[in-house]
Image (cartoon, rainbow, N blue to C red; front, side):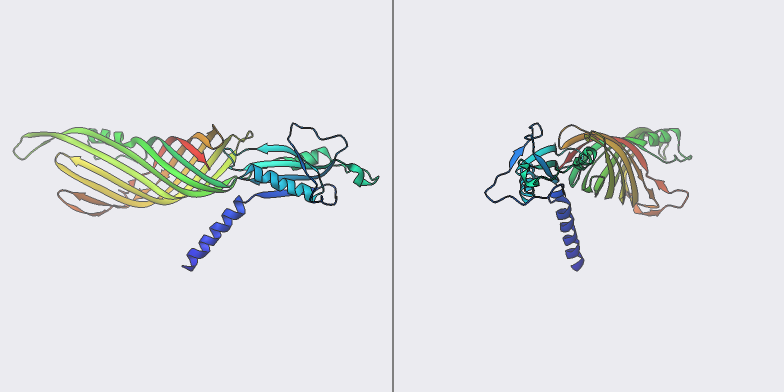
Length: 340
């Protein structure tokens, strides 16, 4: 119980520390704060500052609500003694960040407060560097994807040619899945992922009964290999901030389920193991909150035992080291991602 409370408090602190509005300032020239009745004029990037105005302070803000950020910047301007707030930059939420990023300069329209001293001089490159909007990322990201998959591993030598072809056909299939991550930083997020690989195939077979009669039938399999577990995602946004490369690693539960039928015998084979997931891909932003992308998924897993259940017998089978079942597979997926 105590651990659960501590964990909840930690998550609450993480969300508060990462998502609350963030304000950073650098004071260029000191001036007494404005009186309560004095107003602060707000200028957009395209509007000019009056001649003779003096720069007092530079401000950068990050948060979910743009109007709230402008209000906070106005109060900072008032505290700095400025009666002009000029918005110099505004980045809206996009693929790499769910927040607004705002930069602004505070001016005093009347320079008489300098009392004959030289107006403050700030190197242009220093001010430009300071006003550069950093991308802060904090928020939930939801994704769904699907694609084509190829199962790895060797094919047993003691199978007939028809059976070998059946196994080869079963190597190919399709995948579908979803994941949700919370990015605590622009470049790093944690979450959980579900991935399922499905394949099925059937082949005609013939056998001879004890009386010598030839019996014709079908051998078929419907197989699913699924993974669910925690993931860590590393992300790097492009220069235009619209697209992003990502790499992901996860360790979790990997399960195996195969429904099969041979002539009139039906049954299932089940197995479970620990799986390791690697993923890398690229997302292309198509709107503020939506992106499409492609990725390669590599999932590693091996079964050392299976549970067999048929209409004739059932039980657990331990596989020796020469017959361990390789359920590793690699796939190419396309997906849709929503950034909240």
